[in-house]
Length: 142
Image (cartoon, rainbow, N blue to C red):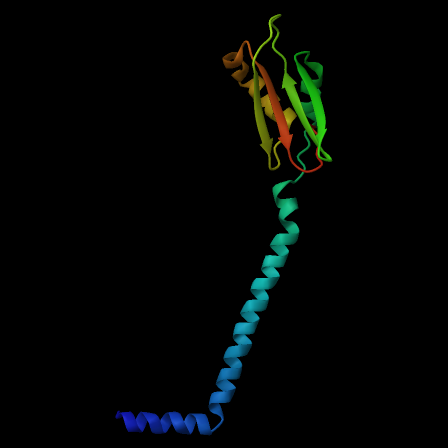
């Protein structure tokens, strides 16, 4: 096909109004893709807190920790936010270093302490105080 023949077909396509309809369909398709992407972004934005900081209550673990003398629940406020945690206090009479572990994203401080106690992990931390702080929105150590 020669260049002049190709040019003739393009001119007929444009003059016949077919080009306008094709461009219109393309613009509508692109607008639909942009609208769908905007909707997905808005949905992710609105649900981000629920996805990251979902409540994870475990009454059994909290009851287990509450009955053990070496575990204490603590909380403090800073800048209008309340932070909750559980501390495992060293049973020795001498002052002991403090290990702080921050958890969040649906984790549970009581559940983490119970799991570490059940697995015997505290044997590696004899002579230390261990604090697990729950870093999340509005949820307690339970």
